[in-house]
Image (tube, rainbow, N blue to C red; front, side, top):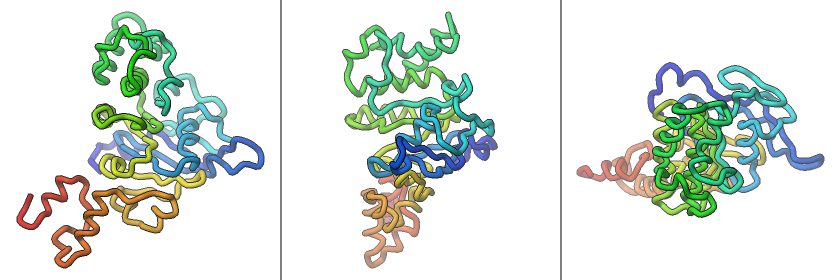
Length: 286
C-alpha cells in the first residue's frame, strides 16, 4: 500500500457492528459488520451474488437504515437518518445507471447534486466542468442521457457524484457490461480521485481487476466480512476462496505455477502486483 501521509491513519468512514435484515425470518443481509476505510485507500469488495455487498454500500451511503450498529464519518456517528451533508461526503454510484439519472441532459445531470447543495453561478459551472472533463463527457453535455451508450451513462453517473466532491466514493459493479476501454476510463477516474485523498470502495466480481487495482481486499460472505487483507495475502488462501466461491487471479496463478517448478525461487516469495513485475523476475531480466 502506498504512503498517504498522516491522514491515512484516520478512518474516513467506519461501521461498527452493522446489522440489517429485509424481513422477519430472513437471513441478515448485514450481520455485525465492522469496516473502515481511510483517505486515499482503494478497497475491492468481493463475494457471491446475495452475499450482502450491495446492502453494505447502501447502508454506508445512508440509504439503508441499520437495525443496529453505528456508522461514523471521521469519528462523528449518526443514527437513524444521516446528517444533511452526508451525501456530499459519501457518494454512491449504483450498478444500473438508469436508477440514478434524473435530468433531461447530461449537463444538468452532472450539475444536479451541487445545485441541490446550494451552489450557483460561476462556482457551479466550474465544478460541473471539472467533473465532466475528468469523465471525458464534455461532448455529451447537451445530449439526453437516455440517448447515450451504457458506458457513457456510467461515466455520467460517476461524474455526477464526483461533482459533489465526496471524501468517500462507493461503487456497485461499475465495470459490469463495459468494454475494456470504458472500464479503463472508469478505473483512471478512480485512481485520480484516490491520488487526491478520496477513499474508494468498489463492489466487483472481477478478481483479476481487484488483484491488480486494490490496496485491500474484503471478502463478503452471508452478510459478514469473511476476511480482509492485501491482495497477495487474500488470494494466497485457497480454502478461503473456495468457501467464498471465488477464483484465483490469473496472474497470481501463473506466478504460483512458476514458483512451484524447479528453480522456482527465481520468481520470488511474494506474488507480483502486475505482469510487468512478473516479467522483470524472468531469469536474466525483463
